[in-house]
Image (spheres, helix red, strand yellow):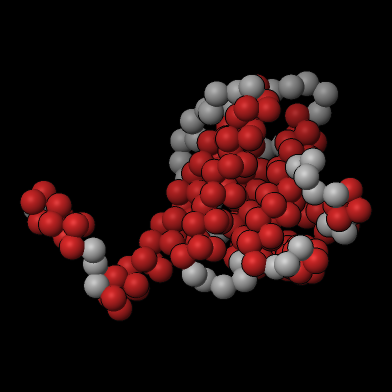
Length: 196
């Protein structure tokens, strides 16, 4: 993320390094474990940095995840490979070990975000941190030999996380708002015609 000033990037470095160290220590070179750990870190970080649960933050967070996948696809010149199952699982051991550092990193993101006026400015900083953590973990897992099968899974990981985030955070919020304010008549008309 070249638009994040180097002076701001260094505020995140300690927490990013600690998170990476624990992921590698816990997951080793096992790809499934790496993807599980990355998934847990990314989703928890989004939960921690989101200023409030409103439509705009839910849409922004889904966009952050999808954008990271798009950026990895374009920059690494890989076509998304299939992840056979949802990479997001609650790996309690890893989450508990990482939780302190994720919370500290989220605090730094909020602090730097405030310098830029708060609101949605956390998005670019969160994108930066998630991207750096992911790429550094993958670099360590690959060693000196590029593994295109592993790299091709990175866009898919973030597309699936975007979908997971929608189902676990945005959809329940939307359902609550429908209960509170009623659904759109257009949706209801089409749903009725489809017999859903």
